[in-house]
Length: 129
Image 1 (cartoon, one colour):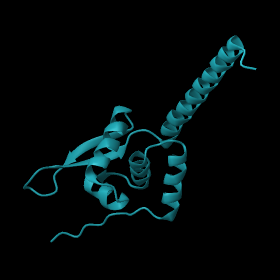
Image 2 (image 1 turned 90 degrees about the horizontal axis):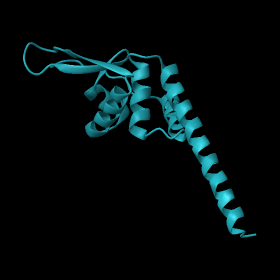
Image 3 (image 1 turned 180 degrees about the vertical axis):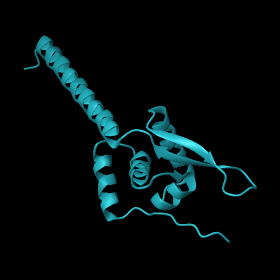
Image 4 (image 1 turned 180 degrees about the horizontal axis):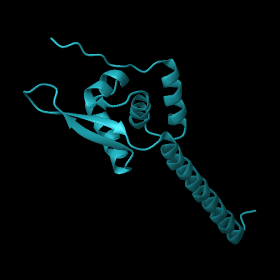
């Protein structure tokens, strides 16, 4: 039998996840981001144990982060037998990820203001007042 040590998110990490969720980040992405920010690298199974997410949720988060080129993955051999294990690690600083969500928030705000202004113009044309 092999000894296996996995880090688990603590209260401070969960507060961080909550803050990310308040910014509109999906739960699975927020949990995976925080977990990977605390470790050098982790397998899907380690992320599953450490975050309480299910494997399909982790796959979606990993795919999202891979599409944005935030993480790298590599294959490692645990034993000489069996399938190699894929491990994930950040390849960009967390500031890059923060900048992504900051830009997204600004775009969302600008779109909302534009829609409100369009409504104001429509109301003035219809003379609802």
